[in-house]
Structure formats: C-alpha cells, structure tokens
Amino acid sequence: MNVIECADQDDVERRSRSWSAGEEFPLLAGVAVNRYRDVLAAHGVREWPRAREWSAEGVVVSVGGGAARAAGRLLGSATHRPHEHVAAGALAEHVRRHAAVPVAVVGLVDDLAEARDWPGAWAGRVGVVTARDTGSLLCLVYRTLTVDAFEPGRDLLVTHHSMADAGQADATALDELDELRHGSIRTLVLRTHGRECAASLPDGVLCGRSDHLGAPLPVLADGRRGPSCLRGGGCFRPDLEPHQRLPVADLDARLVFAQSCSAVAVGNAVFPGAVGLGLGFLSGSGVAVLGALGRHTAHVSLRHEFEAAMSEGIPLGDVLHRLNVRGHRLWGELAAFGLLGDPALVLAGPAPPRAPSAAPVADSPVLRALRHWNSTVLPRLERLRWFDLDTTAVAALRDRVRNLTGQHDTVSETVLEETAVAFAQAQEELLGELTRKVHDSWWQFQGGLMSALRLTSSEPCACPHCGPGRATEVRLTHLVDPDLVVRVVQCRRCGPVFQSTGDGPHLRPVEEAVWTGRAVPVDVSAVVANHGTEPVDCAVGFAFVAGDYHELPGPSRQRVWLAGGEARPIRWPVLVTSANVRPDEHEMAFLSLSDGVLTAMSGHLCLTEDSTTDARSDR
Image 1 (tube, one colour):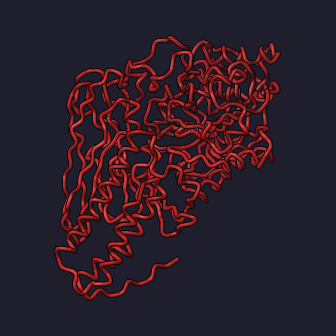
Image 2 (cartoon, one colour; image 1 turned 90 degrees about the vertical axis):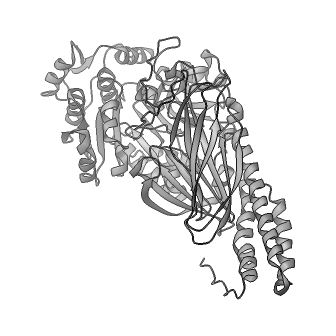
C-alpha cells in the first residue's frame, strides 16, 4: 500500500512529522480522494501510486493551522526543500526573504485570505498550493507527487469566438466540449471572458463551484460579497439552463492555462473561495493552474509564450516568470499571471510560438482660449475616435476655432462664451453616447484598443477603493498616436478601478459598493472635483455595465461647471424594479469628460432579495 487513509486530521499531522518519500502517504477520506481514485482507474491504474521523491529548488512555506503544516511538511520532505510554517500576517516577509528562489506557499484558502493579498505579489516565482478543505489539500499534494502515474490525454484549446485565435480552437462553445467533459486533457488552454467564479462561453459557463448540479449551496452572510448563486438567485447568467453550467472540478485536466479575468484569486479574492474558478480546477484532478490575476487583457502572444516555455521543460515557476515578463512589457498589471500549484513542478506541455513643445505665450484671453482649444482640447476629443465614439461634431468645432483665429483681435466676449458652450455641449453629447455604450454592452474602457497600446510605466500606488498595498498605476501609450496615453490604476483585489486619458477632474464614487434591495430606492453618490486653478465645464455620467442585459435602470448624464478648486457632489437615484434582475454584484461606471480628458471609475451595486439597505462592510 502506498497510501494510508487516516482517521482524522490529528492522525495526518502525527504521521507527517516523520514521513519520508517511499512511505505510505497520509490522506483523509472524502470527495477529493474518491475523484482521484476514479481518475486513476480510468487510466488503468488500479492501485495507489507511490509518491515520488525528487530534489527541487526553493522552499516550502505553509500558512495557517495543522492541516497546512502537515501538507507543507509532506511536500518539503518529498522534494528535499526546507519547510517553514508561518502565520498569515508574516507570510509577506517570509516570501520576500526567499525571493531569489521558487517559493511554494501551502495553505487552506480561508487561511491564505488573512494574508490580504496574492502571495505572488511579493516574489517572482511563487506558486500557491491550496484547497478549500484539509482532505483536498492533502490530495493535491499527493497528486503533485504522483503526477507521472499515468500518461494524460491531449492538449485542448478553448477560446471565445471573439478571440484572435478562435479559428485555431478545438472549441468555442460549451456544446463542443464533450471531449473536455468525458476525456483526459494534458493541458487545457482557456481563453475567454470571465470573473472569479466562472469562465463564460456564449452557451454556458465553466463554473468554479465544486458541487454537483442541484446540490444545496451555502448562503452568504450579510456584508460578504459574492455571486448571485450564493444569494439564492441562481447563476449570474440568467440566459442559461442548469445543464449549461459545467463544474470544472468534474474535469480531468492536469494543467490549466487560463486567460480569463480573475482565474487566480487567493488572498486578493473578492468572492468566497467556495466559488473560485482556479480553486475549482484544483478540486478535481488538476495539479496546477496558470491564470490571470484580476482584470486581464488576453493577448494571443501570451499564449504563445506559455506554449514556448512549456515546450522547454522548465519548472512552472519559471514559466510563470516568463509570462509575467512578457505581459509586463505589453500592458503591465493588465496582463499579470499567478500560479496555483507547486512552482518546482515540471510538466510536459503543448508545443510552441517624444517631448512636447513649449506653448507660446498668450497675449490675450481670446488667444489663450483659442490656443487651449486648438492645441489641447480638440486633439484630445479627436483621439476619442480610438474609443469608437462619433467625433463628427469635433470637426465643426475645429472649423469654428480656425475661423475665430483669423479674426481674434475682434472676437467679443459673447462669441467666446458661445464657443465655450459649444465645446461643453459637444462633450456632453460624447459622454451621453459613451454612457449608452456602457449600458448596452459588456463595456471596458480600453475595449478593442488594447492591441495598439504598449506599457510605458508601471508604479505601485494606493487603490482608490481599498487603500495602499495592492494597486499599480500603469501608463499605456498608443503605437500609432503616441500622444494618446491611457492611465490605469489596476488593483489585485478590485480590478481596474480608475482609467483616464489624461489629468483633470474626474468623478469618484463615494462608496465602492452600494447595497440595496429590490424595489428599494437608493442614491448612488459621487464627487467631481476640479483640482486646478481655472474653471472647467465638465460632463459627468453614470451607467451600469451591460445594464440593458441585466434589466437595470438606464444611463444618465449632466453638465457641471466647476470653479478652480471646487468639488461638487452628484447623486443619481436608482430603483431596481425588474424581477429578472439577479441579486448579484452589478458593475457601475462613473464617467467624466472635461477639456477632452475622459475618465472612468468603477463601483458596484450589490442587490439583495430583501429590503435591507443599511451599509455593509465588504472588507
């Protein structure tokens, strides 16, 4: 016998103190063990395989209670790596101390949540060996040590039909995934839209929950953020039937490469670990997930980098490092990856693949205004074409400025004021068009623009929503129009919370999460502030992302005149009445357009089924 099924966790901890490779590996009976037994049997392996021994580079750091300590000891002993056990609060210090080598962080997901950030944020080659319960964590370590027990099936590429490589995909829809449902996959490459709990395809979702269809679900406590399925409202995709949800824990996929937003979220997760997509894969037969951290821009060259690195037979920690180097060169934190699994593990994988000029000194208010409109505002407004906005009216404004320039010495204050109003009205119309796009689509600030943007700087910063420690300010420059610079504040917890095309007034929500019940009126509040000394005419707007799809209230916009240094509160009354709206988190976009600078900040309306509207903590 190469495995001993222990009576309880105390028995596992006792055996782990003296265990060495070659001895019976201690497991706890349960769903995870049963799943792995079935997978082995399907591959003709009738007896438990022996946990293999090898010498790996790096350290093993376990976090939390006795279960994590035992799992860390077992992994460290089998691979001849030193093992340290630390409290969650000390994890960052220990990972940084070992930043020069691969670090395997071992612990239950709920314990790792106390670290309050993704452990890979503190070093380059970190893999997190984690699970939702003790039995699953021990089984994951055992699967890692017996990964060569059978030869898995082929590699599978699943992409959304909108991706650049959809023509090369083995599947672009759920109804094409029979091989994934019933076969064995060596490497699953998943490139589609998603969030922490799921990866979406047009006709279904790959679901992070490990329960079977029809199983009872836990209900979130007040104040916890999570998807509608944990609020009694069913899947967040109301267009799907139950059979169109595929729990990834039921799949036999050894390694997963997921370019799907927030596929990896441990420590930085917003939703409970019970629904995490990456954790779902590790609840099945998988041993590792290389996946996107936070909101992700899925450039196809990153898939090619993954395939090239895997073909070289290097450890997963080195594959992760190469992906993040490549991603950082492209888009910084918008193309960041994390590793769930042992960074020392080696697996076979798929085959590869200017400075601005000084402005002249103005000698009159008319010339100053005309120069500002011509050299600053109009170019900014014209660049909004890159965001698929109709800038036809901007051409008329440019003609107006050109005509006034020819007679600047006779232009009256009235004409100047009328021109300023025309600019303000044009901005309001452009922002109105944008709020409608947000409401009518799964809008993202950069949208289809990302392939033409490249990283020019990346610096740590405080998150406007959750504070210091987890955010990065990324600046991206357009390859064809280098004067277009997009600024993004990307938080590992909150996602892309702020985006802009320049500096200027922006609309900031008072609260990141606004709670309300169905048919209960609530005010969504924001503040727009002019930090400059000159007055500005600002267009502000508010919309729900895909609000039309979710049957949420429509968008709104207005003009706001701000004196220098003035801040103005804005309120939008919101009333959700449709019975079809899920009790879910609904993303809100707070938009502003001032002097041609477009900004957006995110927020969430957290809808409950009851009429409770008191504020709840989501920290």
